[in-house]
Length: 391
Image 1 (cartoon, rainbow, N blue to C red):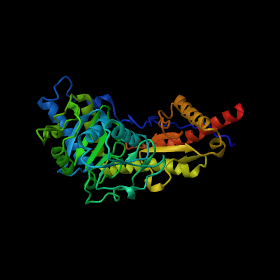
Image 2 (cartoon, rainbow, N blue to C red; image 1 turned 90 degrees about the horizontal axis):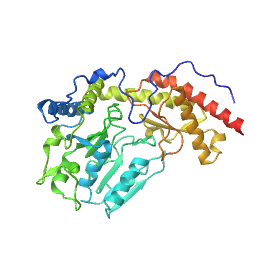
Image 3 (cartoon, helix red, strand yellow; image 1 turned 120 degrees about the vertical axis):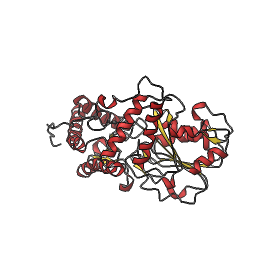
Image 4 (cartoon, rainbow, N blue to C red; image 1 turned 45 degrees about the vertical axis):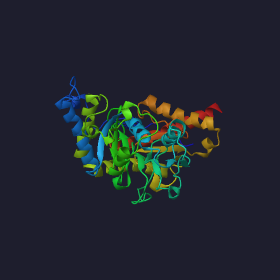
């Protein structure tokens, strides 16, 4: 094997974690000096900050005026669970999954909610299921971007405008990096710590008028915990969607999210964020095209994520090894890069095929990814040499 020289240039920021993700460029703790610390979130200043976060979210994402936006507990998971437990059961549901988080929603609906009329439409890691088999007269739950597989839906064309059921979309690694077609989506969820690099613990829940109608006309057969309740007396609790949160939020995290949204506006809003993520992902896609030892887990170009780029080792000598040895090889590469301080937290998700998962969202600088790629080649060469020596 050709010797690969250890690179001289290091990424200025080696943080390529897929969540929590890198803070926006230039971030320092001083960005949070205006946080309403030690103040009630129900005081005028607290409610004002929360409403500002909601209003900026609407502005950057171009959320329609008649859609509600709420800040909810427990990150994206909390937002999705609120929708599943509050809205499902009114009609049959199609659960669509092609990676671990989508599979997790299936588990919740089948084993926890125990709904009777559930269809599972799934695909292996790296592929999309046949979206034409989805019945939109039923409710539909899906992830827009598979964070752990690097596979996304290319657009919302597969969703009919005249659907009868609700579309519930987990968009946590897509919002602020991909163009969500809200006209086709009734529930959209995401978390602050993904594409904008905010702090964890808070989720966003966006509801269409059709979703609100479901909430006001349907009462689930099971009891709802307080943090899931969005109606009272058969009417939507409107306060949730103007900043009157269900539970106490961290005003420090709120300030950080406002800062991230303000930065998003400064780089061109949604179009600017998408362009940054596309440029980042293209660095890795070009690298993969130029190196035959590594491949994209997502098999079809148009379904490849521009945020959570998932890669697998495709070198024939490595793929010939038993699965546990392949996983050990990938893990050794990740460990070597971590010790060098050039790439932190880039191992594949624990349930996904062994390999690398490198975050390319808008808060990552393209120059850092360009500096990273020679290190990937170096780490691969080092581990392959060590493997040969051990043999």
